Length: 513
Image 1 (spheres, rainbow, N blue to C red):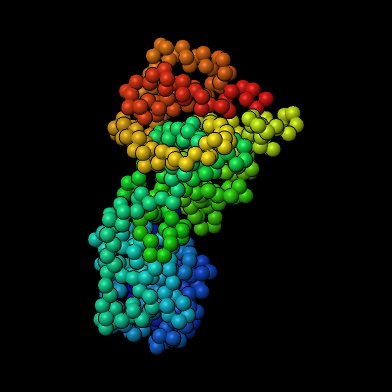
Image 2 (image 1 turned 120 degrees about the horizontal axis):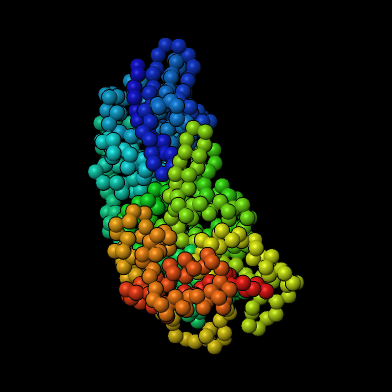
């Protein structure tokens, strides 16, 4: 008897519905076709044990399982449940097997019949709703994640007996109900960190506020213990809250990567990813035999923090250049090309030299001549060209550390950032793909960043006196536009340009001696 059930395969951040055809006929052996990988082929042993443990039989005749479309490679263990239910239908151990076609069924089986969690439940649910399936059956651990999709009945199950009883009409399953908006908005402002914990460092806080307001990349340069990492970790607390669309995009990526905790719903806060400097280029940008999102995609709509930037392998840093410009990364294979979103803010930190004390107000640098420039040269010019703010971090004096009063809280800074972002949203409302000043093209720069004659004079003098490189010009204009937005000023004033100029430390010729 031939029976069809439906599963789903995840490619990139989207899902493709897979038809699981099971035919039980006269003969011998178990055959699985349709480009299954080893994990899918091994489902035979898991399914046989799960059915026997649950009081059902596995046929000893010829069983052919086809996963269609047959030209797409199937990976993972999530097809176990749909294949098992198809076998039960084909052997008439489930009545009315035609009901199976109304549902997408996904789950990994244990030998005792219990059902384990899967990856990518959210994109699977989105695709099931798009194709008008009556419902989706997934492991209990993934039910809240998939239940975020409206107009689709999502059933969370813990054991294969629950599924069999449902299709036999012996019991009813209750759809998972998730109040997505309420849970999402309630958790948006719950942070473990806050800027009011930071003593002193007012100029660094100001620089990070500018970075957040214009979505600018930034690099923090300073000696060990100056507070670079502590400040960077607090950046997400001043970024505008995620919109529902952004949260959905971010959650899909984490779902596909298997990074969502059990019973998770929408990601409510902007992600903060901080990979170790030993990371490989594939782990950073994504890839693998079955392409998975990398750290830059997991940081989508959030912050990617690279601590001790010169310690990262040069090849790892160079592969970021194109994704930083295009805000997506394409993983190409012989038969498939997958796009992963990668719109992130890059925040990095570094010591000014190998010993860490170059330009330190109290300690002396012990590096030999030329070591500072050699250390800085580990970061290529094209990568630095994509970093708008170069911020020098100095140690906090004891007089600041010993103060009892708290600094300005993140909430107050975030309000100013949101106000500046609203100005930019209005400015770029007719331009697709641009929502912040950092993403302006050269053509838009000429139209939007118009400066007065006094500003032109200041900028020319700064470039001549400080020996700023030519690439600093555009960056200064973009940052000054953001500073003007923070000040609610329609025009870029001289004081806005003056502040932007000071954030180009690494462009100054002779900065590293």
